[in-house]
Length: 231
Image (cartoon, rainbow, N blue to C red; front, side, top):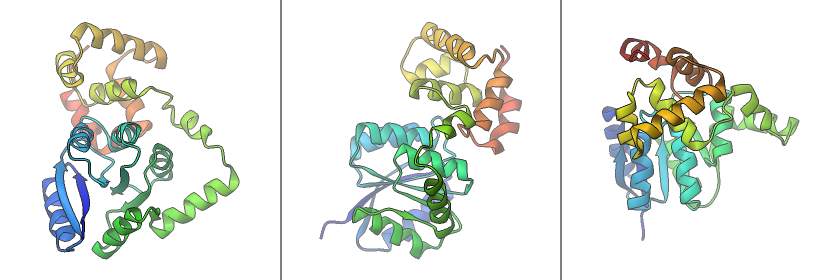
């Protein structure tokens, strides 16, 4: 019997190790790879073709939300299951809109995680009860969730979201150019365009915007402020 191929995308080593041990105890599940950044998750999906990606939201270099968007844009048959410490409605709505078929909080039991993986494997969705209730209430009120993007201020292209996260994480232009595979001059041009589009002209402001929009995790704020390069 063919096993369910899983890619783990989680930046904490101890959590990845625990998930691997938990899931590999089930004979029907195979861990084909482990990604420690969102960008690695996208690259490894391209290389390994997992059936399901178990994705954390708070990932460095490229957050889980944007990684989910990029994976499903290129590999629409891949299924993404979000496993996150966050249960905020805004996070949930954004990942569902990005195409994730399941969302679990990290307080869930191992049995619930394996059940969720099987549900996605069989072409169904799986959300913890509180999240399922929220989504039901949300979409009963309105089938149009365009207001979410206006509320969160994330009317950005995929590349702009990538750039904003890297800037907010304290990456210098040279590092960003290397990460995105573009020239430093192009980074500078994109950066200037982003600042003009958001009408934010300093790095600290971009960082606050990224936190408010859910592009980076708020708990990173003190680290970012400490390591942030000057303009």
